[in-house]
Length: 241
Image (tube, rainbow, N blue to C red):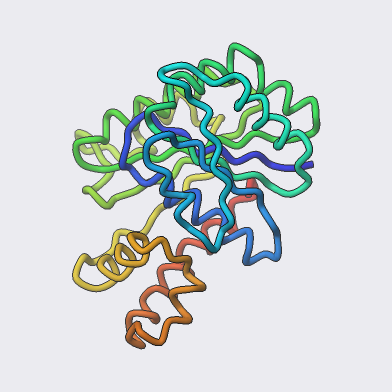
């Protein structure tokens, strides 16, 4: 039936909402109508994309999962015929993962005919080791029927440690069989592509909306079109999507 795309990473500010919005736009470009849900209790960035009709559901009550709201979320997912995209915040990463696993929700969804796809992000810079560790924990904790997509975000620096790329790191080599696809977010020149893309994200604009804006220069729209093409080309080759 549907694929349930959940974006999970315990580190905040690493681009989870960007990933959710990118998947949603890719799906829309395929004439699909994904159900978009933002469960981040602190920074509902995904819900800020008005063009994506994102529904906000607060699944956290303090430091604990709000069982009623979570049950309502599962009901939404269970009846979905189109793909579901769920953006989850860093603050609810631990309780949500624990709740999903302890209640055997991945297995439940699998038995219903759905596929659970966990998208996680690896960044360069100071958060590199934290995000790599977060990926390893997810891969080891979730059951075998869960598929993984790793997004590499070089915004804060190259994704390498002690001369090793992500694909050469122990965290990946030990869990390689769990990874269905690796998506490389383009490293963009800050003064041109990077600035244009960042401005678009800050405004919570989709690519389609930005490309139709006469207020943007011709070259700004051209650069955004190129960034979109690079991202969507990788999603096109990821069979899990």
